[in-house]
Amino acid sequence: MHSPLLAAVLCLSAITGPCLATTHATTGAAHVVQEVVLVRHGIRSPTAAPDELAVYASQAWPTWNVAPGQLTEHGAALMRSWGAWYRQRLQSEGMPLKCDSVRTVADSTPRNRDSAAALMRGLTPDCTGAYDALAADQTDPLFHGIGKDKKVPDDGSPAFSSSAMAMLQNVLLGCTDRPCLEQAKAQGKKVPMLEAPAKALKQAGTLSENLMLEYVQGMPPAQVGWGRADANAIAQMITLHNDSFAFSAKAPDAAVARGGNMLAHIAATLRTAAHAKSDLPTLAPHQQRSVILVGHDTDLASAASLLQLDWHNATQKDDYPPAGALIYQLVEHDGQYTVRLFIAQPTLAALRNGNVEHSAAEIVTPLRLPACDKQLECPLSRFSDIVERLVGVSFVLPSSGDEPLAK
Image 1 (cartoon, rainbow, N blue to C red):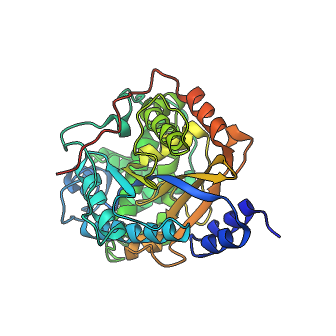
Image 2: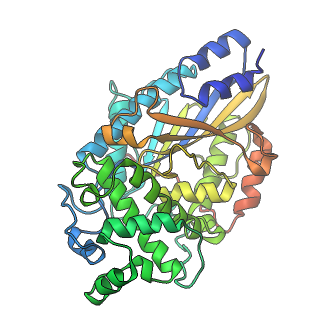
């Protein structure tokens, strides 16, 4: 017979479904007390306008029906679907959802606020759909930390796939041979393959994500990468975005500056839910079963760096897809509290369809915490000590987490 933990992990490593509730009922296993979920916003347009991106490509970039960096209608549909998926997850864990049992906090940027509104419509269709956020012109320290992100040097030596870089360059310019690239540069084009490695990767990370966004937005195949980027090519090129984040957002000093404050407040929230003392204000009262933080890919990368989590999946190349989520789960068993971590990643096909509710759409993987002996389940007290050691007091802002009802 499987242990209670192993049974839960076997269930969750595929999808989150009714098997969890069955496992609990059959074995008397540990029950989920609370979850804190950090989810990336939905599908957005590139943050730069097509005319700004023109310098990188031989053909005109496609136009979008929203301003740069904004959530699209397709992205909103994805977040509604994610909300419905998460409602099913909570129900399968024996946590029936009530209107006051979840708190959703969004970063103040418009795409995050719009993502939170869409998410809540899917999560609580019979409720008001309210979420909390600062005004759009205010920087939220919960999501941006102390605001001292490290500037990425242009002279470093980051690791990345040369084949992915060549594929990206071929999509952008239709060639990769040196004479062609030199000619494009002479004509005023910016050519990542001719740049220093750090600068090349920074450009490639952004450009590969822009091409991914075209694909998951559902643009016609002839329009995605000018017809030179199918799903396999997108999956290979997006690894450049992962590598760019490994060099920048996941650098230790950048990660603690950006993500340390959030991680400290997450740990405090879990401690309070376990009726333990916390010196920090929490993100929600202990009786609330779920806290959802609608953040950014940079927030996910910072958390991965701080906790030394590796969730790269060979079948899901994008480490930080739209609606990707890191789940902190507080579990109680015989009066003892532990923390489990999971990563939930929508597939490329699910993103393009704008629907993550069917069984194969989300890849949910339990994560081992290296600082807790690479265990799948870490005692809460030890998890709290790990976070305190990793973050320290200088990166924590006690006033975080008091975002008002969004208006």
